[in-house]
Length: 114
Length: 114
Image (cartoon, rainbow over all chains, first blue to last red; front, top):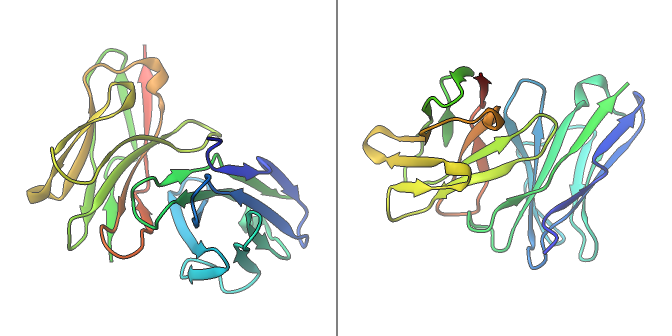
């Protein structure tokens, strides 16, 4: 069981570029959550997705950020026109049934905007 | 809305001393409670979790936590700290009903001195 896989582990982007972060949930998990950890802050919820559906995006910035979880393939968190303030660690978690049981985090993607 | 408070941002203990990290939560119903540990530049590792039953929960690495409903607390303890325990510790709460968005505390950074 490979666990929740996130890639890349580290991503460097220049201001104005796009960042794409990938998350492959654990086998059998169809619920995916994205969190952001800013320096010296705790983790903040961004978005909750099930296959092909966004269930809750209340934590997503209104502009430049989007997420998807297609029928096939990993979940993608996309940040357009990145700015320095987007530099953070982005964590993905998955669960099999949307409950607290089996909630598992990936190792994160550390985005640096230069 | 649910919330988690970790009142201690930084804690320093001597190696071999006992440790208690405080966590208070705010949630109307019975929550699911978690403690995670994060080493610098690393992902989140689950130490232990409480869903129901025995209020004293044993976790990995010799950690335990006690759920006290009357105090809305879920403090993490270890009888004898090792230098390798130096890390950041996050308390988290999840709804026991509905879908499970995790709310994290801001974290407590633990420093262990020889």
